[in-house]
Length: 307
Image (cartoon, rainbow, N blue to C red):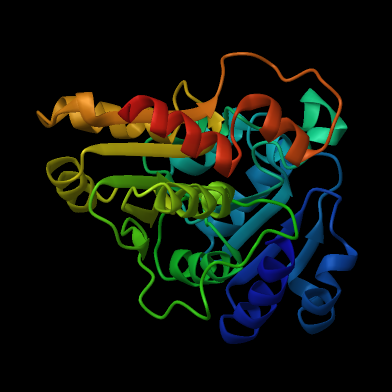
């Protein structure tokens, strides 16, 4: 995802002279092409993410379209006050781009894990929260946020995530979910880098005779309410899947919406990380296996629920 982000931002920078890139002292080689093409619009802000966020807010107030970028906890949690007060309070078009969301950096320990960021950022007024499911959704999300004048958060994986879509998404809209495959018994609502696991879970459920729809819910805020209403009315079971805490994340957002709108919450099932730090040593695949987040584990839990 990060390579797609760097490539698409470079192209966007050629099209839109308002685009400015601010890095928190990582990915410098990744942005060589952007820096070569736009040397006056790339800033390495160092390990000073709070200052980077305040600088981005000032640039946005002067008509530019800044993108801030670094590892997820450092571009969100570390500078939450600046995101809240400098960006969201003033309602300026800063896009915060996080790499390595969820457990993508599991091997680097809990300081680099990010399973609380959706909860933090979706609570902020004016903020839009976008969690692309593959490289094509990353590219489309960048183009979409550049067309609007609001704060936005783009939550990416790291690199090597499976590509789900076959090519560019010409009809991508913030707040409108994308159906990946159709079914009529179970509906899997995936957000962010869990999309490939959701597709795998649907395949296993299909092999077991369960017809399953897969939806990429790339936007957590605002939610696609029409999609949720249709899913809860039609399907026997609706499952939210995320690499984020069950507290405050995508599943929480869906449950809150369902309660507030008189929907049948008995059909809801949430899959995410527990209310605990993951302290074991291992990479993302190992962490997912330990926390029950792989496709086959999700399918097994759904089969148990329906038994």
